[in-house]
Length: 535
Image 1 (cartoon, one colour):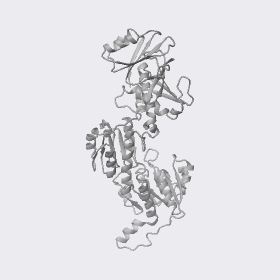
Image 2 (cartoon, rainbow, N blue to C red):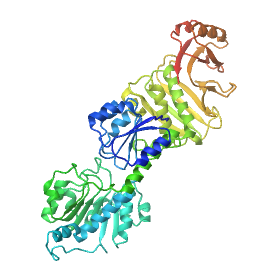
Image 3 (cartoon, rainbow, N blue to C red):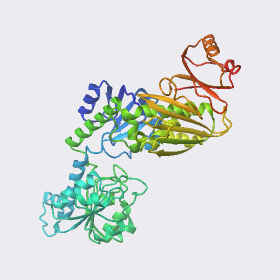
Image 4 (cartoon, rainbow, N blue to C red):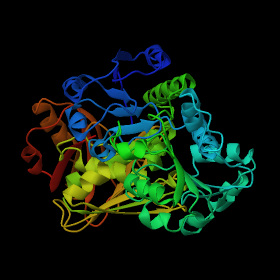
């Protein structure tokens, strides 16, 4: 997938290094301290990329207004302020800078844990009010206590490692982190139902999504120790605030440290003012070091994508990173080309793709999407790319099945290749028609149409690109002189011509021309059938 970014909009305050890195790469950058939704919708059409922090809501309206928008970069971790589904549908890459604020968020979490254990903020407030209430702020040691870490990614790991130095026992839960991996940094990865009754402290470090919304609620509080203390520096909504308040009032929860809220700024006054609640205004990433790292990271990631060096920090295409690497680009062009040719030859809805050889191992999803791009590129209302190909294919009723074989059949060169077939009663063939292709150097080549091979062509395959004609003739018919004359008469130029081997009473010819023909009927007078496509 190739991305071209010439102009970037930064919609809120980001470290100056972000702008400097982008400009050094030749990208124009416009910066704003903050933008209203209306202002953003009006301006986004002029930009290829948008960089935000948590304060900008990138809604589907904003994304739909971005006529040239290709990348949304989040200078931070969470992307709940971005409509990722809408971005994916429009083929817009969403990236974040997952490492930039990890240390700052982890340190704030540790600070809240310490503050809950020793009632530090409450004691400070009391003393500043002229009181001396030593007995009121009786605390507890962290040594020997159990900390439950829900979410064992970058931040959760850093919190666990730091709190282990206080002598805390660390357990946790993360369905995406293998137990042997979490064990390496001293955390036993347990099912959630086993964690609740064991913890003296619980801290959350997961994204907000349907499976984590209200994760700590009335039902789960019933399984917790009555003295449990809760910390949430991740996302508001993971802890049910009403349930938390009920647990605090009943004594089932001994304290809470909150940096994030269901609604920000929060309006739950009863929760904020509770004597056992320590709260901060979403300060997890609010350090100069974190902001500098996040700004630098997202800028370098965007520059890397522009230069074609690879993809880091992808949110909506983490399984498609190979599509952004130079070595796989020729194969993606092959998939697009074969998809376009297959659609020209047949108009079915069942698409079969089989890849062969070690080079395409693990590329089934990416390559299948490339084929869908070729099939759909002239049939959808929004620009199609690797990101939204599957989504748009579903809307169009296309069904893709794919498979991979390591061994390379004799029909292919040693480097491997692929087969693309649309099962239908096609416009040329009365049944399915299989196309075989591969890559020669950096260029896609067509190897065969059905059982008719082009492997004997000078380049061991026909280069596919530009405006192409595929003609079916009776074996032995010499059509080149007539095709040449017809193409030139139509104001185009013949750039390439070759014919396949003869098989099943058919012979296929591939023609590349300088510009498309407006009327194919002039060719149908001397060939059995003809189609035109462009890649």
